[in-house]
Image 1 (tube, rainbow, N blue to C red):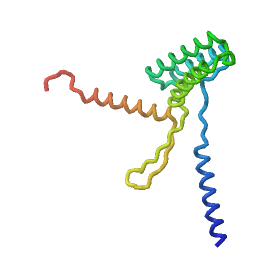
Image 2 (cartoon, helix red, strand yellow):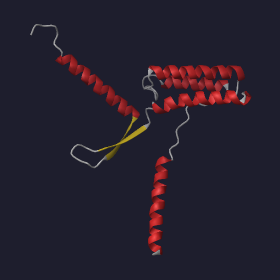
Image 3 (spheres, helix red, strand yellow):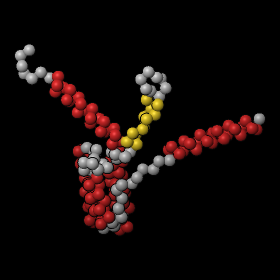
Image 4 (cartoon, rainbow, N blue to C red):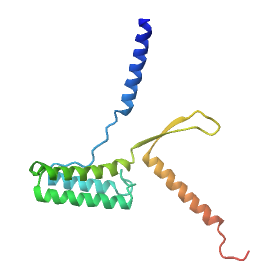
Length: 162
């Protein structure tokens, strides 16, 4: 009887250990700076990575505007105080919130972010988990849209009488 409880405990412990390994994912902090010079370097690096071929190239125009607005707010705080250590508590909270807003957008649009989904293949009821990077998903989406546009152009009559 004790062996049975011990076995159940081991199986439960292994399941919890496995689950914690899956959820022990820490997101990378992209925007964080302690002083004005560090902040300027971070802004330049992020803008560079938002260009075509960069890590954050899939950030859309609306999100770019939000990022730039947050950067402008943070820049004004660093212009006024110089370093985080010189900021009062309310200013630190404002800086933190701006950083979190930018980091949330960049994390969501990170081309290296792994996206997994569980889908049952055609002809089967047994789902399979497939994982792809955000870049792979976006490139596939873009290629599909281009193919659809090409098909529409080929199938559209060109003003002739038919």
